[in-house]
Amino acid sequence: MSGPLGKDLLALEPLSADQINLILDTAEPFKEISERAIKKVPTLRGATIVNLFFEASTRTRISFEFAEKRLSADTVNVASSGSSVSKGETLVDTARNLEAMRIDMVVIRHGASGAAKFLADRIESNVINAGDGTHEHPTQGLLDLLTLRDHFKSIKGVKVCICGDVLHSRVARSNIHGLKKLGAEVAVCGPRSLMPNAIDQLGVTIFDRIEDAIQWADALNILRLQLERMTAGYIPSLREYNRVFGVSRERLDRAPKDVLILHPGPMNRGVEIDSDVADGPHSVILNQVTNGVAVRMAVLYLLSGGQPQLAEAAKGGDR
Ligand code: CP
Image 1: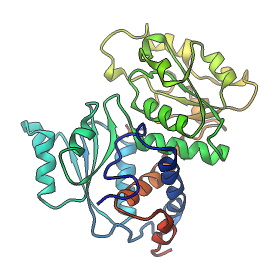
Image 2 (image 1 turned 90 degrees about the horizontal axis):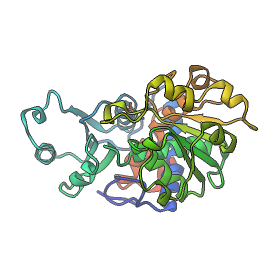
Image 3 (image 1 turned 90 degrees about the vertical axis):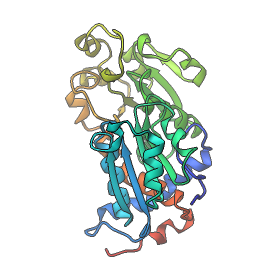
Image 4 (image 1 turned 180 degrees about the vertical axis):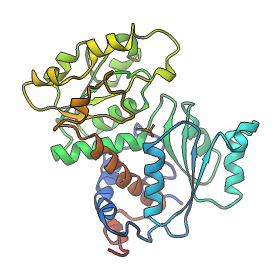
């Protein structure tokens, strides 16, 4: 089935500002369901969703599963280890075999950039990209946008700096596309060795010093160093990285205003972010995680053909 977003959610780059706002607006009424004693509504009863996670995940996998279960969908989780992928079965064969069991949607995380689109082009089920290589992580971008909107009321004109390992970050790409479409001012900050070659073509400001980024920004979205994707010596050492680019309380105290702190997780405390910043008064890191469930409920609802104006009524259920 397809709704106002089309068949799949693969990236934020192809979405319009209206489509992104539609998802964020649809997420609003779904937030309240997770605050109820009985966190379940019948909206997706009868739908079958497969979560194909071929890379490690804590937040995204569990968040999707909660979103699906809270909408009463039937869910199955498949990891590469323990499935026939470990015997050499291809991604498409795995998905086609699942489709033969009459599924409706696939949520996929994969280490290869483009894997979600490759799958979406070959199966009839709706496909949601839960992170593909270094390409995009659209629901992370959406939950970051929702968290910023909660705080600043509007994204337009907000100055957001994405700090750290932009080169390997699908979160950075989704954030840059989403933020720019909604009218934010976007910057990046990190070592030049961790910046993509064509980063300036995305219309972002580049800061080489974290002190300058902090002076400029209303919000920092701080990225983890993706050591598992690094094939060369991009930084001299983690200690050196923390000394030059780490976001510390001391650095934030020199800012002209309070700076909102986001991090997509998992965090490397003491590397890109110090603990007293991660746990400090301006951190919304756990709000991001909470918003992730509502955003994913909204995406599941809209892709299943749900009407945005009926999202409030779709909440139904026991309170
Ligand atoms: N933010 C994020 O994608 O976290 P996980 O890798 O734990 O899913």
